[in-house]
Length: 134
Image 1 (spheres, rainbow, N blue to C red):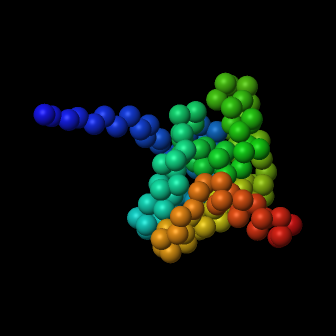
Image 2: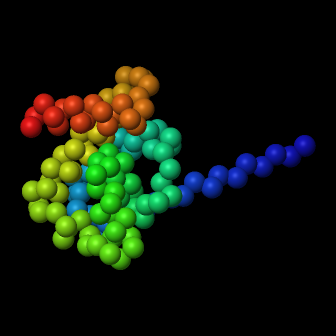
């Protein structure tokens, strides 16, 4: 008996959509590209999430780590709002980038320690650090 498995996962491009073709998060892009384990740690958490509503990996990461950014992203997708580089100041974008890097670092540390970590737990850890730093 033959068995076939169909994998219908959507492969997102790294850039585009709300975050633009020219990435607004260059440090995040570099971090993901510099080590296969960095990307693998992210992929493990991402596998449990749906990416269907996003146009790029950076949009997905931004909106799933910072849910308050989704309304602006959705408006951009419907051509009713600007891209992030127009909507936020450079300082705000760098702060968002720092938050995304912190999230990815938390995911990577859990991966290296072979410790189970959910997306929600990682976001909660990042939010706690950000609250303490404020």
